Image 1 (cartoon, rainbow, N blue to C red):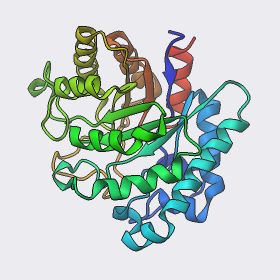
Image 2 (cartoon, rainbow, N blue to C red):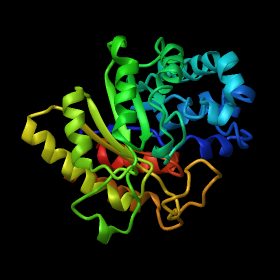
Image 3 (tube, one colour):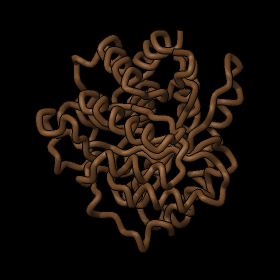
Length: 302
């Protein structure tokens, strides 16, 4: 399994664990403003746990969290800071080479595909891309709920010449209604998303911020599509540890409760099933911390 790349885990709870104060609406963006050293420390701890890729703390740097005025006046500087902190941490880590992924979040809200505004999205994405470009090795459009969001990210980074990974979040509907037909939160199928990934020329298609139980089917569908098209696109998974959410609930309204049953060993069992299905990029999302990543690295890399 030496071809597996280990991603990092969820940022927010690790920031809190190390002493950062988070509150809505700024959420993890507040750590960049008040305690940037803790952001750097979280990156370092994920690398020490085994992560080969750390993701910039830019997910909350959108008007939903920091407000339109602050986004326009301070947004690019904060975005650049998130990139610089991740880059500094990666460059200072000497045990192995670590890549920096530039997080490009859903601009108009997580889990809310109905809020997507195609006429406005590039106006915001261009600020994120400009701030992160000097620091990142790969772009990561993450927690996207519909294919149009992925296409918007593709267009936004097209001129940078850097690899692009797109990560979609899946519906958490009961398994019996989705087996064999996994869907994005928009209702679009993973088959449609994977077919788009081929035409878009992605280097990676991932699935994140959904229950571990729904991921393996998505990996299998994507692997089948890529096999049919002879497409060399890496597949990845980084699931969350949330207690089951109502489908209509937004992802970033509060700090959700996490599952007590999702121990490091249990999460590793899920991860092994994703690798068996065809995934090679494995990490964690909300509620998956450094302890989980450490177990993943030990089990999947060696």
